[in-house]
Amino acid sequence: MAKDTLLIIDDDVDICMLLKRFFERKGYQVRIAFKGAEGIEIVKKEKIDIVLTDFRLPDKDGFQILEEIKAIDHQIPIIVITGYSDVNQAVKVIRLGAYEYVTKPIFPEEIFLLVEDALKMQDKSLPLQEVNDDFPVVKPISKTIPPQEGFLIPKSAYSKHVQQLIDVVSPTNMTVVITGESGTGKEVVARMIHNASKRKNGPFIPVDCGALPQELASSELFGHVKGAFTGATSDKKGSFEMANGGTLFLDEIGNLSYENQVKLLRVLQERVIRKVGSEKDMPVDVRIIVATNEDLKEAMYKGSFREDIYYRVNEFKIELNPLRKNKDELSEFVQFFLKKSNEELDKSVETVSEEAWKVLYDYPWPGNIRELKNTIKRAVLMAKSKIIKKDDLPQEIIHPDIFYWNKNKGSNVKGKPTDSLLLKDVTAAAEKQAIIRVLSLSNNNKTKAAEVLGIDRKTLYNKLNAYGLLEE
Image 1 (cartoon, rainbow, N blue to C red):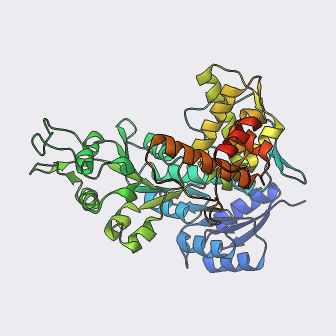
Image 2: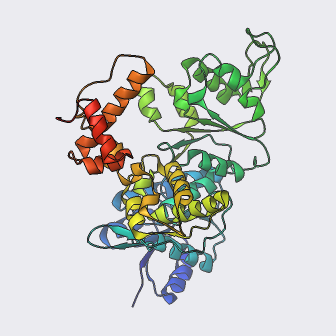
Image 3: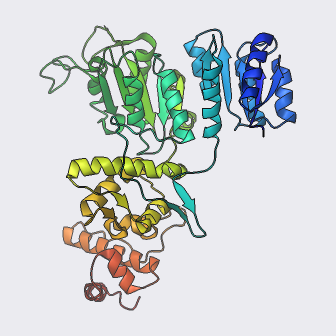
């Protein structure tokens, strides 16, 4: 029985026939097109599982082939073959959705492995999960955990795509924008790019732009000379100078002031900095990677982020999905953090109970991988045996409906906070509000409310009486 259908698009007849015979011996159905337009028509009319295309064709180039095939069916893996090793070309084809970029001469066995790998990535099944009528149960993790070198790259198709982007952009000096929610691993990706680059022996300097005081941001980024302002008792190196010869990672770049955006633009254009209080320019050799959890294009349209900066930094973009969109990676991350937590806490927890797995799988993870890491570490610490049980997990993970409020629905809390600034009044008001919220979400079930609040029923009733809530 024939396997998947492979479409080969190449104007070299010898290459087409060589690959056709090779893949047919492997059990594939093979279709051939000698022009781009012919190949596009085949994709429109027939079921094609994977495409192998030359970059330079008589009527189209690889970019056009990619865009047109992806417009027909974005899930078809496409492997691009070219006779020219061009990094910029490789970057662009990967950005357009190519599975892989291969330079000639080609070796059928190598192509075969790529094709097999690409088709496996298209498999929708999740080997780490089983599905029943109620919820997907992730199988308890095995005791054997593969060694890691600081970072985990899950085996999912999504993570493989991210790794491909890292691999293709790392050797260049292109400025990279990494986008994603808080906790998705933007700095981890930035470090991976640095470690795989020609600058890996140089410094990697991370800067949290959101934590920079506006009045000191210029000094922190560009440095200052002695006497530049009150308190400047000596010369100081800024982040750009410290990153010279390496990589500067600007996290939450959207928080930079307009003035510092202008200065950043000058560095990007001219590769020079000027320290605060100095009249001399200093050349710097720095690769810049930026990260943001906001839409910079939208910020640009609103006028809070300069258009010229946006187009300067947006040479190459890597988008990181939130963990809730990649639940198939949850098991691997739990294994990874379980191993690290055991090492840090000198424990020997081996697995997670199915009841705890249900909680972990159903939870939306608003804090993403960072929140998962902290949750597993706490659970390892709290575990009384070699198995993490439901009760070992934090209450906010077990009861997310109570601890996390849907802002779109608004609050149904009665009363309003006190205007008093006395600590005892503020504390009492916050406690009262917490009790009201928990009672509301637990449908006035005082036993459940007491459990969530971490107190006994008697204490809850005493507080209800003290705050005049018994009749509410």
